[in-house]
Image (cartoon, rainbow, N blue to C red; front, side, top):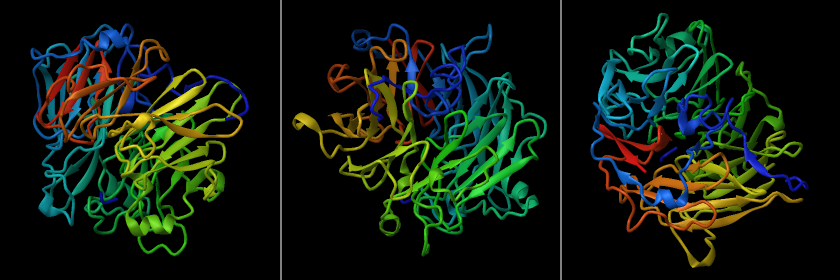
Length: 492
């Protein structure tokens, strides 16, 4: 963890229940806008020409307490004013007026864990890292917080969106809940970086380890009933390690859960690491090769710490009647295209191709143009066309008789954030956006078809306090970027 079918049908993305934001209010309820983690946002009127006028809104003043790794969420209740929800490493959750940045409420969830209380790690203090998820039915936001005490604990909270109060029956102590079900969870050595998701009335929380791979940790998915938090199910990697640590966390197609696991330790035979794994809602594991994929050289990836778990799976599906795909991107710089109906087991990818000259981390974004799917990721492309290079790479997956992918374009994005894509109605006018986190700290935009830079000069900004885990969102006619102690807003 250290760090298409023969049919020429149009390729579209599998989205949530009702489009990119998964509800009809324009809310951003989860990481990358929807459970499929496509990162596709519909912004009517945001054409390439209009994008060139994007400017930092200096009148927007949204202040927070603590470092921000998690993506902000956007909530607009029926008839209510829109607000941003942000959760920080200081274990503070705040609701902010989405127009002005004024704080509406805040809730402290306990003392975060100091770095010195952990065996390893690179986040100090450690509080809320994984992006929360909003459930519109209960009008609550759900999250995991690392909380200090006699020992570090992972507590899963449900907070009312109205005023931040903790809902009855919460928080849930993960270690204690699993102990009651006969399972041992080492809260000190586990970390929760990946985004949470909700499927069929159950909250799912992924866990991995800390930077440095210390102690007794596993890749876990813990499922918690929203109606009865004491009803808990869990799955974990049989081997030590195998953390689920990518910021995109768990992806879902509305029926199953998909996770990417990292390197394991001491495994003589494959034991859940270096893999894309499909899980049913009950989290009962499967050894069927249709339900997992691992590269044939998984042992070498373990040895090199070049794990597959640095990026979440991308769920792609062509038009009616053709096969659905999964794209996995690894720290080894490879892209693995998988058949979603049969993930293939060990070595069973449809395509295995080197696409980057460095490790691929953070989260990709996907969009469709004509008969092809495009996937954008932060990473230096290995086969950039036209002599262009940069740290933003876009792959094209063609609808053809034989599965194939190639690099469509590369661009200089100035840093290592996770990209998103905006379109005016789901497909038209695709624009790839990314922040140069831990680099030039500016906002960048590129035409989805060609990679042409849309913002003048070096991009919009600059901003301060960006983390490379951070992902911007498009909501309410603005772009929002989370950073340490604050959120930035861009208007167009």
